[in-house]
Image 1 (spheres, one colour):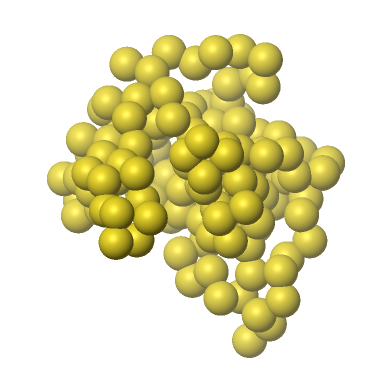
Image 2 (image 1 turned 60 degrees about the horizontal axis):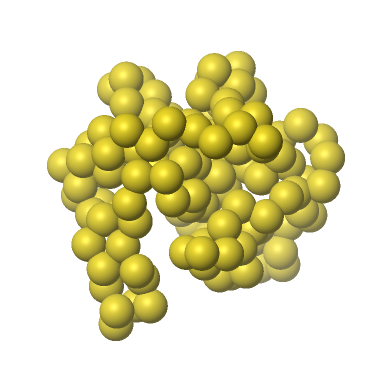
Length: 133
């Protein structure tokens, strides 16, 4: 298995943009949805959290809203941006509760689990402030 960091390219073919530094996100906790062969969850979708998605995620066993200081995890709230597992995003899409996505900050490896059409359906412009309800 290749454990080197994958090239930092977004799903649009351009340079991968930062997703969030507050809270600090990414498999490498560098603010970007960078990935490597060590990232078995494929944390590559830069998602904008919504209350609906956070409730869904908790329901399916991944509580993203409760702080976990022992893992330096602050807990997420609506409006926060986070590098989400591509498979979880696809699951949320199928259930009708996918969060918004920042395409410029979503790593090209997300396309292994989600089509560009599905990501684009949930895309929010990088200059747009998404509704976090």
